[in-house]
Length: 607
Image (cartoon, rainbow, N blue to C red; front, side, top):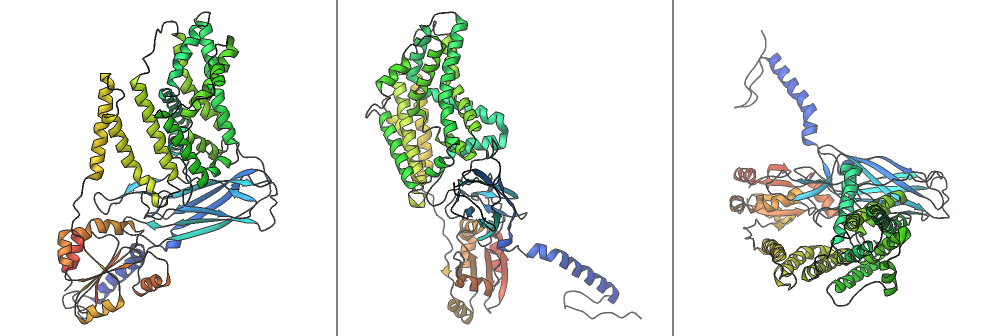
C-alpha cells in the first residue's frame, strides 16, 4: 500500500500520494532556485556599472595629444543619471581622470543622454539617464617633459547613482587604470567629433548651443550636421551688425563694370573672403590644444565673458555705439577693383560682423576645440560662412535692379533690442557655474518671459508697420501665457507627514500597541520623489495612514549611522516601505515604488 503524507496546513495542501507530492515539491524547489534570485536579488550598487575597456589613442608623447577612450556597461534593466540631470537633487554621473602632473585632461565628452519618464506614476518627472553600453572620451595633453616610467598610469573613476523603474541603489563608483604607453603617432584628423556633452560640475561649463549642434552630427550624420550649420549662417544675416552691410554690398557690386559673369565671380570671391576669415578662427581654436575649453572652465574667464556680453548688449540698447575703427570700416567698405578687391572686402566684412555674431558661435568654437581637428574646424566655419555669404551672390547679381532695401527703421531697432536681450541671457547663462545652486538657470525662464512681454507690448519700436505689430503682439501673448503658467498658484494637497526615524519611538509604538509605517528613502532616489508627489498626497492614503506612527529614515548620507540602519533592517534599495502591526511584527515589506491604491490596500490589512 502506498503511504500518504499528513495534512500540511489546515486550509492548505491536503493529503496526497507521497510520490506525487514529492514531484510537486521538487518542481517548486527547482523553480525557486532558478527564478527567486532573479526576481528578488538586486545587483550591488558597485556592480551596476562595469568598465569594459580604457585606452589612449594615439599613445601620448612629449608635447603631444591623445584621446582617452573609456567604454562601460550598465546592467540591463537599470540606468544611471546622466552628467546633466534635470534636477540638482539627482546625483550626476562624473568621470574623473587622475595621474601624473605631466598629463592634463581636457573637457570630458559624455555619451548622449536618454530622456525618460518614470513608469511608476502618470505625469512623473522626466529624467536624463545613461543606459546600456556607454562611451566616454577625454582629450589628453602631454607636457614637454612627459616621460612615462614603468608603472605610470592614469586612474579612471566613474561616480554614479543607479535606478530602475521602481527603486534606486546607493551612489557608488568603479575605477580602472590605464598604463601610459610609449609615445605614438599624432591623432587622427577628425578624432573626437561627437555629442559635445561636457563635464559640468562646480565651476565650469560649456555652451549648450554647441552641444545641440554636435548632437545633430552624432545622431543624424554629417550631411544634416553641416546643413544645420549652413542654415544657421543664413540666419546670421538678420543680426544688427550684418544687416546694414547689405546696402554697402549692393552698392559695391552695382558700381562694378562688366557683365553678369564677372559680377558673379566677384561675388564668389567676396564670399570666399568671408569664409577664409571665419575658417581661420575655427582652425586657430582647434589647434589651441585645449586652452580655449580650459579657459571656459575658469570662473574669472566666465565673469569677464559675461561682462563683455553685457557690454555688447548695452551697445544694442543704444547706450553707446560699438564699432570697429573708422580706418577698418573704410578699408572694408572701399570699392577695391578686381577679384582681389572683392576678396579683401569679404575679409573686412568678416571683421565688421564679428562683434555681433561672435557670442552666437561660441558653442561651435567649444565643439571645434573638443574635436582637436583643424580640418573639422575649417570645414565647420567655412560652411557657416557660406550660409552667411551665399545670399550676397544673389544680391550681387541683382544689384543693378535693386533700387532700395527696406528702411532700417523701427523694426530693425526692435530686432537690435532683441539681440541685446539675447546677449544678456547669454551673460546670465555663463554666470550660472559661478553662482551656487544653479540660481541663474532658475532665473532664465522668468527673464525670457519678461523680455517677451516687453518686446511684445511695451517697446515703442515697430508699432507703425502693421504686419510687424502683429508679429510682436503674438510674441507678447505667448510670453504672457508662459509667465501665467509659471506663476499660477497650484493648490498643494494635504501631504502625509513623517517624523525622523528614531529607535526609541519605534519601541514606544510597540509598547503602545500602535502600527508603524517606516519609509526608507533618499534625496537622490527618483521613485521616492514620485511617491512623495503621488502616493503620500492621495487623500485616502493620508486618511488611512493617520492611525500609524509614521517615520522616515533618510539614507542620503553615506555614514556609519546609515550603514547600521540599512544593515539592521536589511535594506537593499530605496524606496523601501515597512509596515509593522500593533504586535510589533513586520506585516509587510515592499521594495520599490508603491502607488496610492496598492499602498491603501496594504495599510488596511495591518491591524
